[in-house]
Amino acid sequence: MTQVQFHKNSKHISRYPDIIPNITKLSHSSKLQMHQIELTKGNFLFIHPVKDPEFYEFLYIVEGKLGVGDQIYDKYDYYIVDKSQEEVIIDILEDTILLSSIPSGKKAYDTNRFKELAEIMEAIQEKDHYTLNHCKRVKSISKLIADELKLHPKDKMNLLKAAFFHDVGKIMVEDQILNKVGKYTPDEYLLMKKHVTFSSEILGSKYPGLVHEIVLEHHERLDGSGYPNGIKDISLLGRILAIADTFDAMTTDRVYKKGKTFSVAIEELKSLSDQYDLDIIMLLEKIIQEKSELLMK
Ligand SMILES: [Fe+2]
Ligand SMILES: [Fe+2]
Image (cartoon, rainbow, N blue to C red; front, top):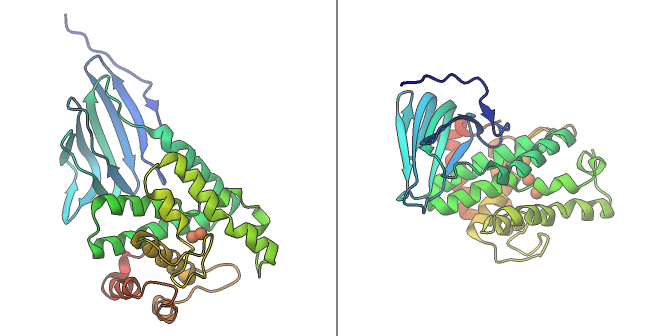
């Protein structure tokens, strides 16, 4: 006998659309798991390689627009993830809803791993109203540079994660230091500088790979004047992140200062080429000249 089942209570798995996809579990039949995935414009979706030969995910775009390389996929398009999948980064070009179907018993979304990070980022937003948006912008500047450099997807993925979470350690810095208007005392500056090590430690437990190492380098400078370790030999991804971070800080309005224009910030970075990689600065200048509309402000 055929049976039609109606269900009311879909299960919401995560709720941080700005930070990680918003996922709702829709069905739990013996054969299939269905999820609805909501993605926010301007974010990225990382697809990691799947080793399980039995894994198969069908994703259908209910609404929205996604970019993969030069291709654009929108309503009625779909894509499939299986064991042969390499790392892929999907640009979320418009707010998007996906419908996902995977076999029952297969692990689908490990949102718990990111939940803690997402919660910290939300808490940071409560502490100061600058850092979360700064991290989003640093991520998109880093992405533009990575695309221009044609970085390997794996490097790009690590860079974008590092860019988004690079200041997560600010959660451990006191509010009055974080929000201080005016110059830091030497002691306050010491405490502020610790956010780098805190970020790296928090991320080290979530991302065993490169991410926390890149984060550790974001305030290092080529002449050795940076912190926390004063190293001169900084990785390419660390050098990109340092420039994206500084460029955003220079060009953003704060309570105590007006942001510089893009071109003034680039000239200032060029004058600091003993500290920042000049090739990457020149690349950023090219991006600004050709596609400044892609830089969010
Ligand atoms: Fe920082
Ligand atoms: Fe930063």
